[in-house]
Length: 120
Image 1 (spheres, helix red, strand yellow):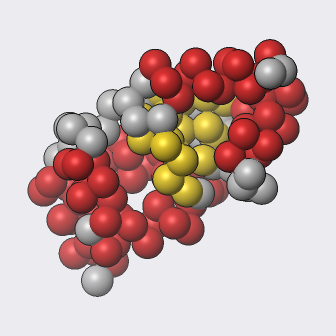
Image 2 (image 1 turned 180 degrees about the vertical axis):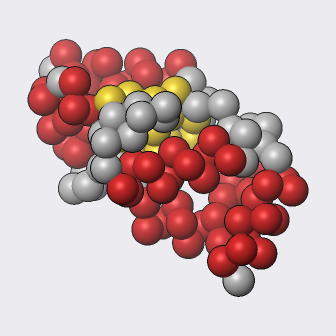
Image 3 (image 1 turned 90 degrees about the horizontal axis):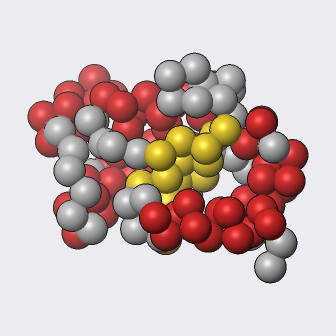
């Protein structure tokens, strides 16, 4: 294993929810990362954010680790969930709520409902 893949594996194993993103949850540096971080923040989900712009090895490593070509990438309980489009669809369909509930991850159900109302 490379250093990046070891670091990624430890990060996704040691945190219930992890977002590999460009920038941080307080200061996203791309629209797609901003959208996913915004959804998670609005829904009150506690998550670890990993800024792939800070480490080129990590930026490439996460793409290889997940076999997914784009960033951001969301992991819940060690499992890759998807990128921006998938998370957006899951949020609007309620699938993200179900995934979080099934994995014992706390979130604000009212906030999730408000997102759906605003986009319905």
